[in-house]
Length: 425
Image (cartoon, rainbow, N blue to C red; front, side, top):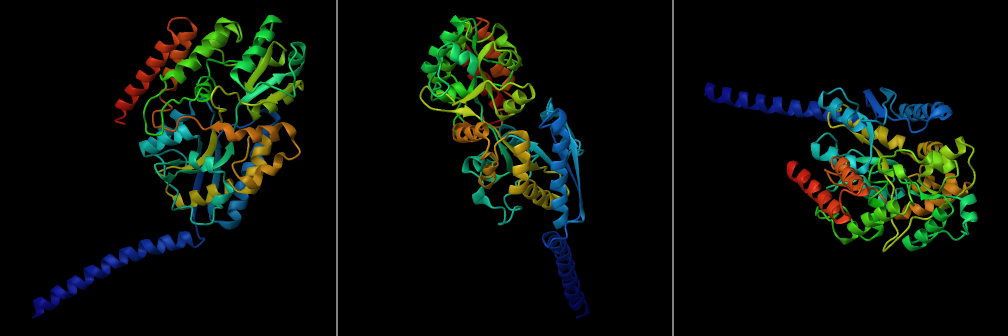
């Protein structure tokens, strides 16, 4: 009988111990969700602006932390700036050594790669129901979603398009009020520019294909990797885009150093190039240089009007010890108030619809905002980032005359397939 009661006692003790453990975890969770978040959060940011504007950027991020601390005074927020160069490797290396940030900034093609590597925390459940989902443009929500999970909240959108030099435009008989909308219309204007001794457009081949090749493929009606994961860059549309680049280079529509150049902005503001491919950031740069002889043109189309425009988001590291606090911080950082301040400074386009009013009295940025409907965030696939150097190299080889557009496209497709196989995708 004693053995029986002893067994019952031990069983009850075991159950109580288990419940005690569950109760302890639940209590901790309730404490966090009840507004008593504690601990420290490190946020990695980048130099979104330069020069005299840096002090204003610091102020904006400090204000984000200040308003967050009004709600969560027991969480210490520390912002650390890292350079753009090699940021991807720096972040991955830091996270692998458990030395990285709790919150950091990435773009959609990085998101897919990082999510697949397991270094990001899905924040779908951490956000709760009070993050004004309907205030974000659907395209931006698509850009921060991977395999059905939300991995970040967007603070900015971008659109890349043409800025035309109005002096050159008028000299060659162009009309600032009726700018090209198609490849054919642009090429007609480009021919006139070259005949007058100018280049037609900037083309920085040393830059990412997001800013060079991909927009042309989309405009031709093609894609790089389709929604089902199939590699389609070497389909006729991709070849046609490469043929266009080849023609531009052979005909002198783009500068001779276009193969490897990273900077054609300077010759543009020196009145040597008809059109610059740029973004809202280009507006800031022109302002700094005192250059005002420009007009904004729409993205072009062959079959479709399309361009590249990233979506910048803040995400939570998988190894963060304060994931709930990190998610709440992201909500605060991307609120309407802070989105307005950040985007007005950086000349990006807010992801929040309620923040778009910042450009109501800025004709140039308002026009760019209208073009964001045509912007695609790049290739959202785990290998999108790793194949960029290979895509770039094949395009450069074609421009050098070492490969035909078809050969370059096929080799691009092969490189992507090999990377997918390497990653087991």
